[in-house]
Length: 152
Image 1 (cartoon, rainbow, N blue to C red):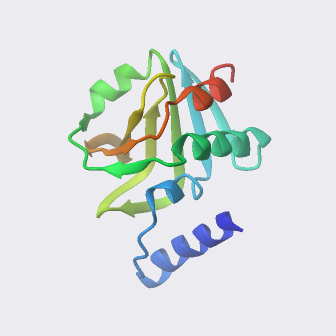
Image 2: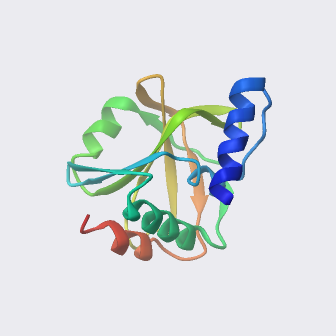
């Protein structure tokens, strides 16, 4: 039901120019594809794949009790692309451009490190990573998310 409501919000935004601000935790629910990068190896997971829901549930658990904070980070496309060659990353793709806090994106990228107690959401828009990031402070760490995607 939540996914249906989020899709309805996106349709309203795109068809009628209605701007409905989503909570940051809802941003993941409206993605249509997830890409996991594990030391440069890419795995694409479509919304119909059972892994998709597993990853969303793990992301929701990690985000439980967390909150959005002002972000000081700024992403640079060439540095982000180089960083994707090492470590574990997860990227949420969107069928349409989405806007949060007046910042547009068509993908959101997260580095997944087990003991991190927060993360930057790196925005992708108009063919490149760049601009201000969103920062999410967590109530715990990212272990659950890491464990759910490390062997994908």
